[in-house]
Image 1: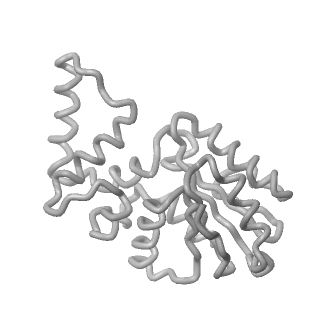
Image 2 (image 1 turned 180 degrees about the vertical axis):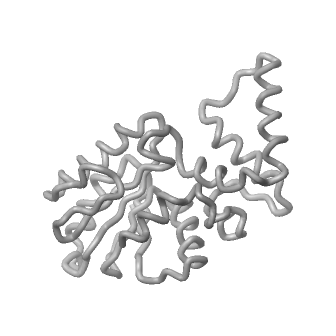
Image 3 (image 1 turned 30 degrees about the vertical axis):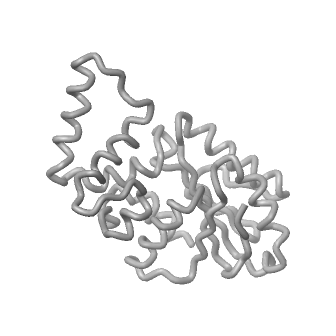
Length: 201
């Protein structure tokens, strides 16, 4: 696991480096420089990582911690998992997403694409470019596959995201690198929940 050394009093914890690259670009566009983005190496490492953060010598300067996690196949279970990770470190977690606790540090949780929707950060990114001319073609491609009896991918929107990125002049297969190339539209309503989380900092 990479170092999780605390450098700022506001921390945004994300799953991995791809998400860090995405939010680095998001913060750059939004002109935000007072929140530290901390990737923890995967959703299975929240408990271990939060314990390391708690034991950091600079933890005493932390005022607020926000956590973003993919919903995957079960958004409620994802939320409960983050709650349990916070609880295991001796803190009281939020009871709902996008609500700050009253403790210090304050805690916030955001499940993406939403607490009611399965999926991941790719769904948010893809939704931000629905008006792109490539999207109807990509949607039709998967419809054609289904009509021909082909087995569709388990994570359809992740596959659609890769197809979309393949349509760009300079190809990348990572949403974070794509963000650095200004491919995603951070002003889209698709990012409303993320915008609200950052506002709460």
